[in-house]
Length: 216
Image (cartoon, rainbow, N blue to C red):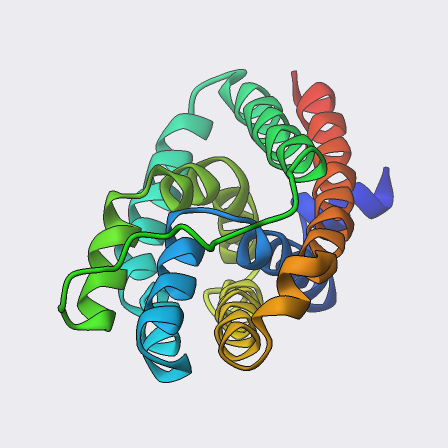
């Protein structure tokens, strides 16, 4: 239980970085609206256009994180709600993990051509309207942010910076890889990466569930 407390109640900087790397990899590589747009822009233009889309979380995630953390703080001030939120987060991570495990090999040959718009602007609009980052930060990211804030006002950066670095880095790698070697990605390389990251998400889901049970 000490290790669980270190991760979700009194996290060290190393625990936050480790969790951020796992979650960033899972969110970065999992198919979704933003990744689809990264690939679409790359195939329609080049890897630079895909990279602009990949950078959009730097703009969109700040308000999403702030709102999600505030909602978590308000909810956890009520008796018993914290345990329910952890269990909800565990359920969300389990859904992400199993969704990734059962993903078919990604194919993008039939993607529609995007309209001629600024790639970064398209990425910002897509991410703000995409429910995935809102659900992620509310149910999975906010617990780490709040626990880190309780340790020190600077500790949340130990989670946010590695998370966004991996999230964006993976999407840039996807853009570059599709630009240079579309065939390799369609042959299953991306699918195996999704499987591995999905397993990591399931492990984190177990930690969330145990913490939720312990606080009820």
